[in-house]
Image (cartoon, rainbow, N blue to C red):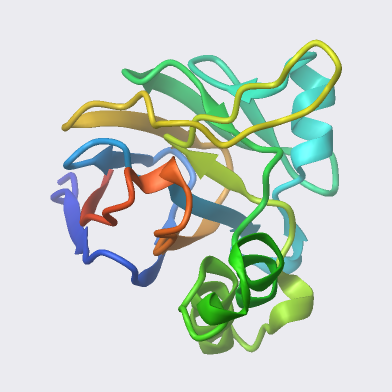
Length: 201
């Protein structure tokens, strides 16, 4: 008998984590559109093996994540494969926001604002990990154009309400998400919103 889908609604600004077993799918849904969803995957059996943005980009010879992309671990193994994607492309270069980067980019008056790095620290602490275990992450639905000279900008999101990206797990993985709270650049349309995660067979 197959298990029922697991549906998780994640409020704006908040972290979440969950186990995705080999063969299961995880669908991340941008419920309201233009919401960046910072995500890191870890091998469930050994958290020292985790998503590698560098190996993923090298493996596919491309800068963006989209349908068909294989997400590669720090050990060179395939963690997940993107099997469906209604948005078109996702960033894996820009990293996550933090209180420190907010202060540098947007002024000292933003230093009190919660950020993805703090969300990751809170969620990783549940698994005995800390800030040293945060690696360059995926930014699902975040629009980061790269110019010919290599410079990057964070631009208005291109995702619409209900857009999703779906991945099939090629190993047991721990998925850790920060539903990005950034309000100083357009990655969230200056208005962070809830998202949904669906784990199924």
